[in-house]
Image (cartoon, rainbow, N blue to C red):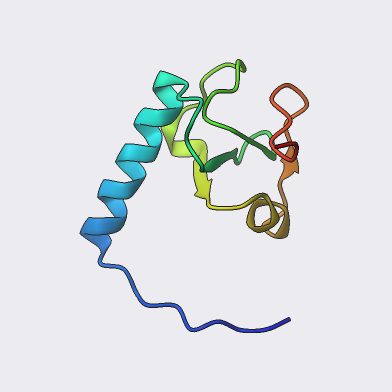
Length: 84
C-alpha cells in the first residue's frame, strides 16, 4: 500500500463540501460523482439511489467505491454503485 501526501482541508471548507454532498443525497442527484455510506446499515450508495433517505448523522461521504470498501462498507444492491 502506498501512502499519499494529503493536503489538510480547513474544517469550514469540509463542512461546506459535506453540505453540498448531503443536498445531492436529498435531491437524489444522478450525475454526482460521490458516494455516501450509511453507518447503521454498512452500505454505500450513489446519491440517486431509490432507497430511503438516511439520517444525516449516519452518513459518511467517499470519493470512490474503493475508499468505501476499505472503510468496511458494502455496495448497495439497489443502485449498484460499483457498476458504471
